[in-house]
Image 1 (cartoon, each protein chain N blue to C red):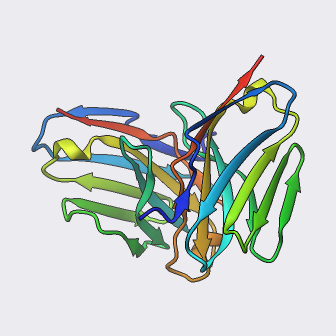
Image 2: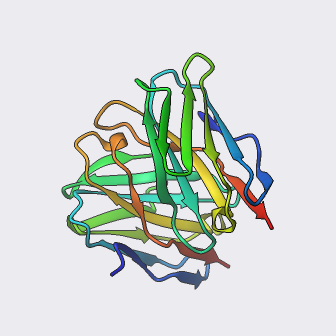
Length: 115
Length: 113
């Protein structure tokens, strides 16, 4: 059983389109995250949710909107896609009162290519 | 501004020898450090961590050393095995509910037969 799953694994789309990436974790964790790994290979946090509440919201464009319907799911919706949005997006989860102190479990990533 | 730096983009080590991956950080508020391992087309997986109250943590073939005065940590893998070939990310965080894990850029380790 996959602990943290993401769909789709690959996403190729045109500039200007709106797309969503879904993430689900079956670990019973209460905190979920979205990371972006860009072409320079930096893995940077975008958002985190704890029990469906937004905890971390890094400086990302408003076109990116996370949605957490329940604590097992954290989806990422992106409006008006731009070329610079091309990257690998990783979902992760952890169980922690203090976010940095427990290991995060990562999904396999979604490679987004904007043409 | 990179708060976590891995200055070696890649490293090649003979199978059976020791692999040493280095990491430097700039934020003195960091008090917890982690290493993650990543294979191609997979997400990073947690490997080992260390709290700032310690200077060494060992788990099987993996040992992490922390030098707080130098703001430096290293991951030692001994003996190195072919399956250790991967990208290794150093990461750090500071105490606090909103604090997040900051990742380095990664070092690609090649284990040579």
